[in-house]
Amino acid sequence: MLATTPPMGWNTWNTFGRNIDADLIVGTARAMVDTGLQAAGYEYIVIDDVWQGSERVDGRLGADPTRFPGGIKPLANEIHGMGLKLGIYSSAGTLTCEGELASYGNEEIDAQTFAEWEIDFLKYDYCHLPPGIDGPGLYRKMAQALRSTGRDIILSMCEWGVNQPWNWGASVGAHMWRTTEDIFDSWESIVEIGFGPQADLHPFAGPGRWNDPDMLVVGMYGAGNVGRGGCSDAEYRTHFTQWCLLAAPLMIGCDIRSMTAATEAILLNREVIAVNQDLLGVQARKIGEQVHQGDWSQVWAKPLADGSIAVGLYNLGDKSRKVSAAFEPLGVAPDRSCLVRDIWAGEDRGVHQASYATEVESHGTALLRITPQR
Ligand code: GLA
Image (cartoon, rainbow, N blue to C red; front, side):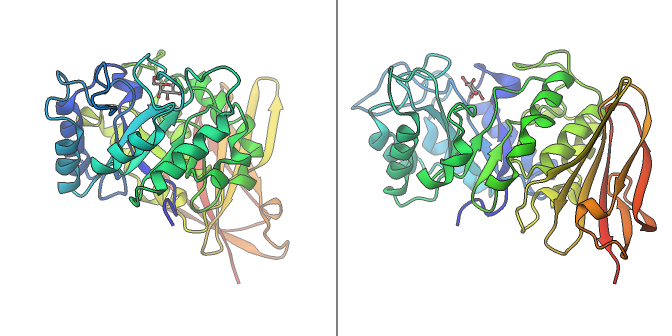
């Protein structure tokens, strides 16, 4: 099975938008290795929109010869040589969202081309569909075309949740599907995408089939294509924690060739990543929410394979406040005490009965690992 845990990697779009070329891809792949991101589990380097040349040659897509002078195949070789995997982008419509050539009516030949280039991941968008066409049917078509190449290629559906893809994505052969509109590098966007409607989607995720609330904006600080003012490190920590609890694919969107120490500390925290990559593959549920006079907190819980529970205590409000989690709603038997570990702090907090509470800064997070005791 492909994507037994949520795929991890990096994608060009959030920071670089249309301004991408072969040097960026290779430089980023090197940074993936040199910074330790690869060792921490990040694997896919994904070229998003605007890599394409202006016309098909012999019916085939090709890369823009100015920005990708050798084409995609040598790039794939170089990426594979570093032990990484290469992803690419197309759309189910006649053009991509940025108006480049796309795959409608050419699904088979495009899948063949991607397989010949030794592509490992395809992000497949939803712009410029002919009127009245059956969207899910187009994803089935591309999934079949990819399968018949015989190559293992992850299919990442990007139809923004329009047709409730969590209901049919896995059955057409996709491994992940966007559940929302595009993310932007702002606190408002993180809250809207991460702490709203995702709460209902946990039944649909599991090994090989992941809900995708879009890529990470951690470390962008307002710079780049989807920059909108940027976020504080506490806000990025909240964003990363929630994506880990949601068992979301972790596709980095900042420029990893020049990360701050704070960004590295977030994206490289192995204990937090382990929550995301846990083999049980269960997406977190929202356990509780409190809204009171400007205070706003939420508690989310993700059961883990070893019987412990990862719990996010989120302070979405504007002042520091105490956030607490009662153990019983997490599925802990009432007579059981629990060992509490604060994952970001990297410290155990002792054994507690019935509940645990801690002070959480505004827009901040405490991520706990709660282990029921014998
Ligand atoms: C859509 C997608 C984005 C990105 C752009 C590229 O907006 O949702 O993630 O791929 O297209 O044009």
